[in-house]
Length: 435
Image (cartoon, rainbow, N blue to C red; front, side, top):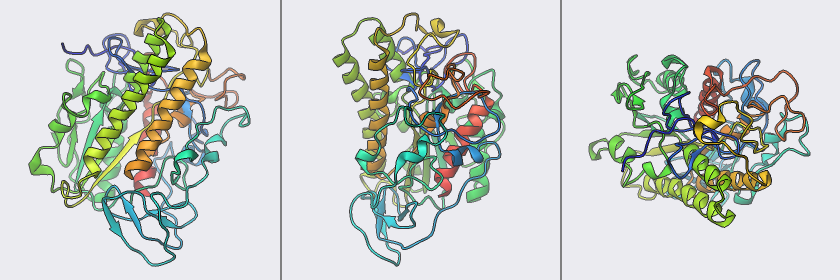
């Protein structure tokens, strides 16, 4: 039976359109997702540093201050320099850490540079404490334990730095409604549209036409699937089981005759998974089952990442994967009632113990980081940058409180980004790709 394009699956922000069927929803603890699907789309933002953008709606994933500095103008920080080391990435080249060293991150291809050599899958991991810098009370802010996996954090603190992304020939967008884009935002405001413009400039690609940048509100997909060097197989309401068969996003966007193109894959996915999981928990599903469902959803992302990087011969000229973690609209409080329209997405009752929901969301996002480290791919800190820009942004007791006057980066659906939110997401992806 086809899955309904779920309206607001509120929690984690992968986007359900406002009022009506939406494919994903981001909510606070779990955040967006199809109301009929088993998992939602966003996760609850817990830690992270606030972007330094001057304006933007409140959202829950607070990223580093550096991330916000360029969110409004789209600029990013370039790679750092320093002693180089041999590194393996999910694609082809060494990874440069914030201290200037390069390190091995995956097993696809290896490129050597001069300098001191290091070994291991990630090299010297960077401290993720930069993600707490934007919060008013960093000591009490919820902090995800990314360091347990040994990631390399980019010097911009907007995401990881496990790949040296160069010479791209084809760009593929997979994922949910956050990637497709939803009304009332306009097509040119969607992060994929903004990012496409940047990538045309970075890599000399053939730009997509105006129709590619629009969303088809009937089917919940891009109005035109492929244009120029860009493809979108993302869809409203999509979950992690839509990547690989029996889902069809990867099959649709990667015909065998395209495998020789040096490809960059961009995706936001998981919000609808978490949204459904949050609803299940609120409706009485035992916590152990809730956690098992979240682990299964994260593992589907893991399987997808391995599909891209495990066989270097599959993409002989290289493939790169950059994905977002899952945000949510409660600013780390797990108060599902914080958004006035929460009931439209099926979030009509609170969790009896919000701390349990926070724990589920934190664990879900930590597993996303484990995927990035394990496969040598990259993850942007969407959760951390939006945390503190959600519907509890004005609550000084919220873990993601950033101070008075913060803008809300979620629209009236509770789960989808505003135009400013899309600008922030585009900036996060740009920073990770550039470094």
